[in-house]
Length: 380
Image 1: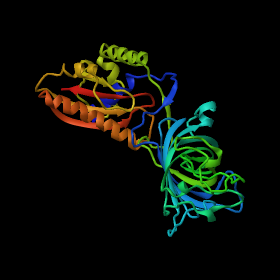
Image 2: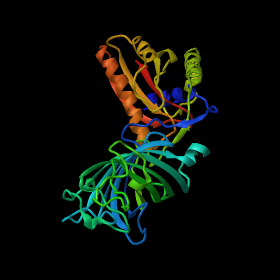
Image 3: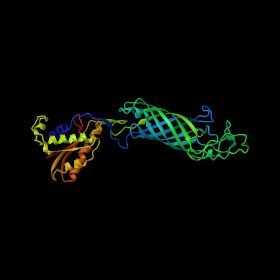
Image 4: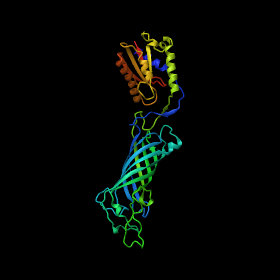
């Protein structure tokens, strides 16, 4: 263990605290996902008494955030009433389903910046396209469809329609890590392809039916409905120990070059500089700086760079080595323990493939208070 203490001391001496610009911790594909449920009321926008013809709905939403500003969500809503769509004939509890793919933009982070945790109150814009399916039989010129001077088209009974949605989420974040969210969402929804008939006039003596819009996608107010929903969202935990994006200190190439320069300077120091750090409880085998090989890693990574492989290639075949992996203070203890062990293992695997005898490869997590993204190899 005294040898490991020496290696820890060498790791601490290779880095120094520096002011760094803040940036996002690197995310995996499995990070920053959320799931939510929602429900509310919908009503046709025009030619309709809003509070008379309300259509209840409920749905599920699954989403992913690519940045604190931009994301994507998939949602499906089920509608339980024909109101105000008079021409449909249904025998099911769910009268229609509408599935949307939506792009999301967090306006609070877009204009105010991301501070490391979500704000207590945020506004998010959503926009996208979907597909509406109705569980109804085909309707063909139903004269009983006249309501308030409006006659509905025979095309109303078609089962599938392309849709579009534009919405604003007024969201409140809460929880120990802001992992929960409740939101209120007003939205406008358009049904493309023509749904509603035109008001009859005296000239319409033959009761011809025709729609207001064509089969081409068209944002027609007469083919739209307004919806007001409320919902609850849970944000899944991420690999770096937070339910939301995490800010860390960025390290640029200049800082990496400075770190390499410190490593080179350490190699030129006298061995007693390191030995002074070791507790003198018992005599230990003298370790020379030239016996140490330092391997640096990018933030949050455990892959060997070309420079790291070049340094490891200097270890002779048949030599015996001990390896210690370390991590920088960003992130949780569990993550840093795994990351440091992964760094030690990747170095060990590389050396074993070159015929080097690895006596020990251990990850020790964070060592010190500064950025220790290292694996240190002691060549016996």
